[in-house]
Image 1 (tube, one colour):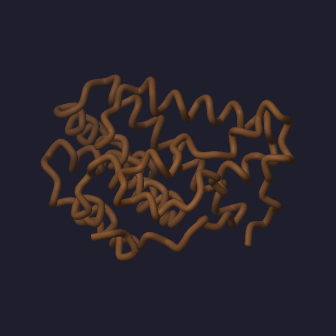
Image 2 (cartoon, rainbow, N blue to C red):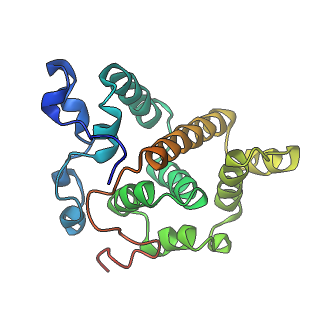
Amino acid sequence: MARIRLAERSDLPEEHQHLIAAFREPADLAPEYRHLMSSSERNVYAAFGRAPALLASFRDFAGSLWNDADLDARTRELAILRVARELDSRYVWHQHGRIALSAGLPANDIRAVGANALERFDEDEAALLAYVRAYLNGAVDDDLHDRVSEGYDEETIVAIGMLAGTYATIVRSMDALAVPIEEGFIGWDLANAPA
């Protein structure tokens, strides 16, 4: 049970009521994953909806990360999944495991992030995943920066850092407020996802 009362649409000013829904509707998911998302309403937004003006600003910023960062879906979702796994966030893993599947990431790649089996990935992606982990732990050094720079340009590296930092904020906020997952947990190994 959440430590705060999750906002309902009617709790928010009319101009902010739409913000409790996810960017994507269940119908936007690949057909084989639609059943994993019973509603577009997300508890993360209902929690943040207790501060409607901040929720609006947060949604604008998060949307910019998705739309303006020029990250392909694979890179974006691998980075977010790495944040979720590193910070042990079932909530973010549950949401983005489904998004990653819908975006076409192979289930075995998602499972590999969940199991910290990074040897599955090529040098560039392994460096990226190591970079996200080090970023979260305040441990990016020159050698790791040089490694990730071999596969990604500066714009992408900045975007990955901002994405990781934003999702770390989401994870810590969700943990502090004890916000539950809307549906049953998909599982670190995707055990509750379709084959």
